Image (tube, rainbow, N blue to C red; front, side):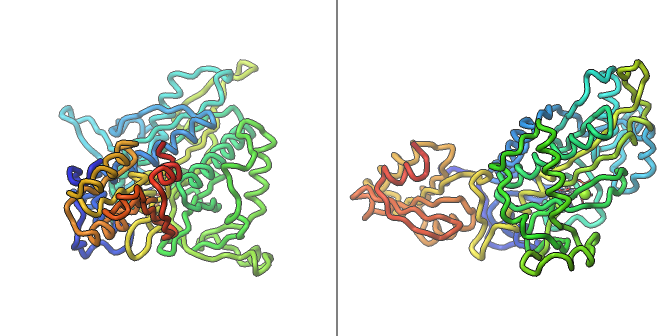
Length: 438
Ligand code: ATP
Ligand code: MG
């Protein structure tokens, strides 16, 4: 994309209500615009990040055998009356009436709907297990929407639902999902630690929250630093093998991690000093096993091997896709701006032409840009070099490729790594090889 033509409304003045770095940076870098309290429009660069995150989530969910569906945002109140949650959910639920005075609601989550769909389509234990997910907008009328997309009212969530024949099978689905989550967060370039959690209004008895470590997080966290060093994506754990899921279960049970709400001083005291890490975290995901709560209340049964009908066991598994955009920035920024991890960045490279109008400079920039226009944001504006450097740092693309009139004569490019600040003087060919643009 050419920056001179791009819709990238960077802001100089940030509204006073933006209290935390990610909210300020998302407004300054032109990723979002608020349209009403807790509701945002996603601008081109922000939408690219949102889509990149959703795509990683999708790939890793598919990799454990979950199948993608898409359920609507509007739901019938009838479904929620069947589960008994219509009254229980309270004022966070946005209730709507259609022209026939039928009660609808804007879904805050989808347990009821997916249970109903499953119940009317799956009839036998032979069809189990099933794992379905969708990535869809949710609405919760939060009493105090704040911190930009971190606590919005309308937000983008991946929610998955598992259906199993027994507790033992459901527990496998649960840990399979946990492995998928650990891999998702690693690929997103953040460290997220699963912590035992209360099950809240969803109900049930096995639950973990995933917290991204960031100094501005809402929760205090205490954890064993073993969590810092595990690379989930290269660890040879196979989500299809039961014994590997048992290994993960043991690992989680034996590596202490808790939010301040659940922190247990006695277990903490048993850890040697050098293993203890304290910090703050942002909840980006939450997984639950809740047994037959919904299949029972909504009357969903399948026939068993012995012919007798039973209620399948369920779990539900959420990831806050739009919250993650803010959480990643909280975990990865500096005074100059955002530092995007490679896989989520709107563009991999910002190409800075330091002298637009200079023939040699323009030519080399065009040659570079033509290699992969979709991965390069080409700053071809007639602005001062200082403005371009500042904007590139603010927008946070992982690499800056800097071409000035002097270097252009010898086909030399300066590469700057946004995260480390490291600068390299390379020939054109070496630079594009280094960036994987060829
Ligand atoms: P919180 O405790 O932060 O209010 P929650 O426990 O109510 O979240 P869940 O029902 O577990 O949220 O939803 C799954 C995920 O959806 C959360 O882990 C979070 O990442 C995201 N999420 C929940 N509420 C919001 C919101 N208001 N804005 C943005 N993301 C949200
Ligand atoms: Mg939660």
